[in-house]
Length: 378
Image (cartoon, rainbow, N blue to C red):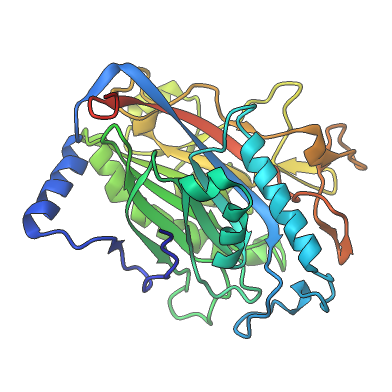
């Protein structure tokens, strides 16, 4: 069952109300490591972050400025174009793992409504049977939000919240909230997932920087106590997915969240209670970024992981070395026109002209593995 009701800001909602004893046992499991895992057998967990470029439905929502994305709007967003877009997103999800099936956890950026996600899942029987979703409901004027698709067999959702980004004492900030979900894996590991779409650079990077810094500060405040738990030995991990509207070496990622590029063995050994940016592979056949603007590539789309996921011989959930990459297929791109030989993402729209592409961003993907518990191997 999909849980699409947005909770009150900064309130974490458990999906069930356990008794005091059950709740105490749950916390004990999360903090002390859960069930013992069978080290001889490991399963994989694949994680994707994808800005899908304006996934709107075709229905008018009076509470949102979605007039442009209606059949009579400036983008002439018809049911045919909407269905094509859904098919394109579904194709990317099902192709991302090079012949395997869709990733287990998928952070989506620029989604208008729960209807979009329901229509997306209905396109393929396996999607509708295996996945559930969460979506925020924020103050962005156009109504775009962030969402999480999760495979129920790999991630048992325990609770979630949306974190609004209203700066104290400021005018209302029309932007997307952060999504925070907590769940457990079949191995007993607990996993906190944050999906973000930091405020845009509209009006200039310098003018808009304080808004991105504020969002990163809220995110850092949520992560710090969890990082400290992980550093003390709890199998409690963090993944941050999304569009940062900035490069990994800019302030939100590097200075405020304190995320260093990985691999970085010396830094890891010095500070286990921190976050790391999983650098995508950068071979000759790899895109030089996830986003291309006027011929300049950048990694706006990022996956950050807690140091607990980067142990060389993990007992629980652990990163698959060198698995992080930008997802690219020739049909996702088109020839670049400025200062780059690598195909740039083929976007859905050029201004108000329907271009028919998939998105103006490439997805990013990373793999992890975890030991199967004795119960899951029966």
